[in-house]
Length: 203
Image (tube, rainbow, N blue to C red):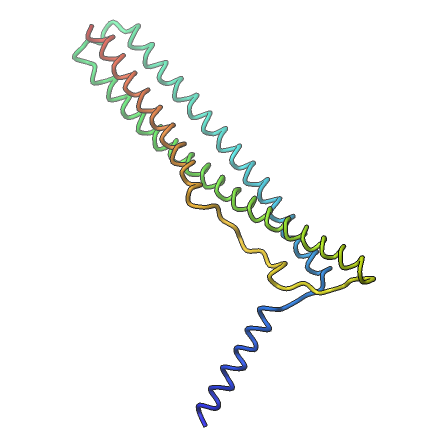
Protein backbone atom coordinates (compact mmCIF):
# COMPACT_ATOMS: atom_id res chain seq x y z
CA UNK A 1 0.00 0.00 0.00
CA UNK A 2 2.76 2.43 1.00
CA UNK A 3 4.87 1.54 -2.06
CA UNK A 4 1.99 2.23 -4.42
CA UNK A 5 1.36 5.57 -2.70
CA UNK A 6 5.06 6.47 -2.91
CA UNK A 7 5.10 5.58 -6.60
CA UNK A 8 2.13 7.88 -7.28
CA UNK A 9 3.79 10.70 -5.33
CA UNK A 10 7.05 10.30 -7.26
CA UNK A 11 5.19 10.23 -10.56
CA UNK A 12 3.25 13.35 -9.62
CA UNK A 13 6.41 15.21 -8.59
CA UNK A 14 8.19 14.18 -11.79
CA UNK A 15 5.24 15.38 -13.85
CA UNK A 16 5.16 18.67 -11.94
CA UNK A 17 8.88 19.28 -12.38
CA UNK A 18 8.63 18.48 -16.07
CA UNK A 19 5.70 20.81 -16.59
CA UNK A 20 7.35 23.48 -14.44
CA UNK A 21 10.58 23.21 -16.41
CA UNK A 22 8.70 23.49 -19.71
CA UNK A 23 6.52 26.34 -18.49
CA UNK A 24 5.55 28.67 -21.34
CA UNK A 25 4.24 32.20 -21.56
CA UNK A 26 3.00 34.34 -24.47
CA UNK A 27 5.71 35.92 -26.57
CA UNK A 28 4.50 39.42 -25.77
CA UNK A 29 4.97 38.74 -22.05
CA UNK A 30 8.42 37.27 -22.67
CA UNK A 31 9.42 40.34 -24.70
CA UNK A 32 8.23 42.63 -21.94
CA UNK A 33 10.14 40.65 -19.32
CA UNK A 34 13.34 40.70 -21.38
CA UNK A 35 13.00 44.43 -22.04
CA UNK A 36 12.65 45.01 -18.31
CA UNK A 37 15.76 42.92 -17.61
CA UNK A 38 17.72 44.78 -20.30
CA UNK A 39 16.67 48.18 -18.94
CA UNK A 40 17.55 47.15 -15.37
CA UNK A 41 21.03 45.86 -16.20
CA UNK A 42 21.73 48.78 -18.53
CA UNK A 43 20.98 51.22 -15.70
CA UNK A 44 23.06 49.15 -13.28
CA UNK A 45 25.97 49.16 -15.73
CA UNK A 46 25.86 52.96 -15.96
CA UNK A 47 25.53 53.22 -12.18
CA UNK A 48 28.62 51.06 -11.58
CA UNK A 49 30.56 53.02 -14.21
CA UNK A 50 29.78 56.28 -12.42
CA UNK A 51 30.85 54.68 -9.13
CA UNK A 52 34.16 53.56 -10.68
CA UNK A 53 34.79 57.05 -12.08
CA UNK A 54 34.08 58.60 -8.68
CA UNK A 55 36.47 56.25 -6.91
CA UNK A 56 39.16 56.95 -9.51
CA UNK A 57 38.83 60.66 -8.80
CA UNK A 58 39.22 59.94 -5.09
CA UNK A 59 42.32 57.87 -5.82
CA UNK A 60 43.77 60.69 -7.91
CA UNK A 61 43.15 63.14 -5.05
CA UNK A 62 44.92 60.79 -2.64
CA UNK A 63 47.98 60.72 -4.90
CA UNK A 64 47.96 64.50 -5.24
CA UNK A 65 47.86 65.08 -1.48
CA UNK A 66 50.49 62.42 -0.91
CA UNK A 67 52.96 63.87 -3.40
CA UNK A 68 52.35 67.34 -1.99
CA UNK A 69 53.22 66.00 1.46
CA UNK A 70 56.38 64.33 0.13
CA UNK A 71 57.39 67.58 -1.55
CA UNK A 72 56.99 69.45 1.74
CA UNK A 73 59.09 66.87 3.60
CA UNK A 74 61.78 66.98 0.93
CA UNK A 75 61.84 70.81 0.93
CA UNK A 76 62.05 70.91 4.72
CA UNK A 77 65.08 68.62 4.69
CA UNK A 78 66.83 70.68 2.03
CA UNK A 79 66.27 74.01 3.78
CA UNK A 80 66.80 72.84 7.36
CA UNK A 81 70.13 73.69 9.05
CA UNK A 82 69.42 71.84 12.30
CA UNK A 83 68.81 68.36 10.95
CA UNK A 84 71.94 66.22 10.88
CA UNK A 85 72.78 62.60 10.12
CA UNK A 86 71.86 61.46 13.66
CA UNK A 87 68.40 62.95 13.11
CA UNK A 88 67.68 60.97 9.93
CA UNK A 89 65.35 58.67 11.86
CA UNK A 90 62.88 61.55 12.15
CA UNK A 91 62.14 61.99 8.41
CA UNK A 92 62.45 58.24 7.83
CA UNK A 93 59.91 57.53 10.58
CA UNK A 94 57.62 60.24 9.22
CA UNK A 95 57.92 58.84 5.70
CA UNK A 96 57.25 55.30 6.91
CA UNK A 97 54.13 56.37 8.80
CA UNK A 98 52.81 58.43 5.90
CA UNK A 99 53.43 55.60 3.43
CA UNK A 100 51.61 53.16 5.71
CA UNK A 101 48.58 55.46 5.97
CA UNK A 102 48.64 56.08 2.24
CA UNK A 103 48.96 52.34 1.58
CA UNK A 104 45.82 51.61 3.61
CA UNK A 105 43.90 54.40 1.88
CA UNK A 106 44.91 53.26 -1.60
CA UNK A 107 44.14 49.63 -0.74
CA UNK A 108 40.63 50.55 0.38
CA UNK A 109 40.00 52.68 -2.70
CA UNK A 110 41.31 50.00 -5.06
CA UNK A 111 39.13 47.42 -3.36
CA UNK A 112 36.09 49.60 -4.04
CA UNK A 113 37.15 50.19 -7.65
CA UNK A 114 37.71 46.50 -8.31
CA UNK A 115 34.40 45.61 -6.67
CA UNK A 116 32.48 48.09 -8.80
CA UNK A 117 34.31 46.93 -11.93
CA UNK A 118 33.42 43.31 -11.19
CA UNK A 119 29.76 44.19 -10.65
CA UNK A 120 29.72 46.24 -13.84
CA UNK A 121 31.20 43.31 -15.75
CA UNK A 122 28.50 40.99 -14.38
CA UNK A 123 25.76 43.39 -15.41
CA UNK A 124 27.28 43.79 -18.88
CA UNK A 125 27.41 40.02 -19.38
CA UNK A 126 23.82 39.62 -18.19
CA UNK A 127 22.77 42.52 -20.41
CA UNK A 128 24.44 40.91 -23.41
CA UNK A 129 22.74 37.58 -22.76
CA UNK A 130 19.32 39.20 -22.37
CA UNK A 131 19.83 41.22 -25.56
CA UNK A 132 20.76 38.08 -27.49
CA UNK A 133 17.71 36.20 -26.16
CA UNK A 134 15.48 39.12 -27.15
CA UNK A 135 16.95 39.15 -30.64
CA UNK A 136 16.38 35.41 -31.03
CA UNK A 137 12.75 35.62 -29.90
CA UNK A 138 12.06 38.51 -32.27
CA UNK A 139 13.61 36.60 -35.15
CA UNK A 140 11.38 33.59 -34.37
CA UNK A 141 8.36 35.88 -34.14
CA UNK A 142 9.11 37.44 -37.51
CA UNK A 143 9.67 34.04 -39.14
CA UNK A 144 6.55 32.51 -37.60
CA UNK A 145 4.39 35.53 -38.47
CA UNK A 146 5.46 35.20 -42.11
CA UNK A 147 4.17 31.62 -42.13
CA UNK A 148 1.14 31.94 -39.85
CA UNK A 149 -0.81 35.16 -39.62
CA UNK A 150 -0.56 36.55 -36.12
CA UNK A 151 1.99 33.90 -35.07
CA UNK A 152 1.32 34.18 -31.34
CA UNK A 153 3.25 31.11 -30.22
CA UNK A 154 4.31 30.75 -26.61
CA UNK A 155 7.89 30.97 -25.35
CA UNK A 156 9.56 28.30 -23.22
CA UNK A 157 10.82 29.25 -19.80
CA UNK A 158 14.47 28.64 -20.73
CA UNK A 159 14.19 31.17 -23.56
CA UNK A 160 13.23 34.16 -21.43
CA UNK A 161 14.65 33.27 -18.02
CA UNK A 162 17.99 35.11 -17.59
CA UNK A 163 20.39 34.14 -14.81
CA UNK A 164 22.92 36.56 -13.34
CA UNK A 165 26.16 36.14 -15.27
CA UNK A 166 29.67 36.23 -13.80
CA UNK A 167 33.02 36.50 -15.59
CA UNK A 168 35.52 33.60 -15.53
CA UNK A 169 38.21 33.35 -12.85
CA UNK A 170 40.80 34.66 -15.29
CA UNK A 171 39.09 38.06 -15.04
CA UNK A 172 40.58 38.52 -11.55
CA UNK A 173 44.08 38.51 -13.05
CA UNK A 174 43.39 42.05 -14.24
CA UNK A 175 42.79 43.16 -10.66
CA UNK A 176 45.97 41.48 -9.42
CA UNK A 177 48.07 43.27 -12.06
CA UNK A 178 46.46 46.55 -11.05
CA UNK A 179 47.32 45.97 -7.39
CA UNK A 180 50.90 44.99 -8.24
CA UNK A 181 51.36 48.11 -10.38
CA UNK A 182 50.14 50.52 -7.69
CA UNK A 183 52.01 49.02 -4.76
CA UNK A 184 55.18 48.45 -6.74
CA UNK A 185 55.08 52.17 -7.51
CA UNK A 186 54.58 52.98 -3.81
CA UNK A 187 57.56 50.85 -2.81
CA UNK A 188 59.77 52.60 -5.35
CA UNK A 189 58.67 56.02 -4.06
CA UNK A 190 59.36 54.94 -0.48
CA UNK A 191 62.85 53.68 -1.33
CA UNK A 192 63.61 56.89 -3.24
CA UNK A 193 62.46 59.17 -0.41
CA UNK A 194 64.34 57.24 2.28
CA UNK A 195 67.51 57.19 0.17
CA UNK A 196 67.16 60.92 -0.52
CA UNK A 197 66.77 61.66 3.18
CA UNK A 198 69.89 59.70 4.05
CA UNK A 199 71.90 61.39 1.29
CA UNK A 200 70.74 64.89 2.24
CA UNK A 201 71.41 64.51 5.95
CA UNK A 202 74.51 62.30 6.00
CA UNK A 203 76.54 63.27 2.90
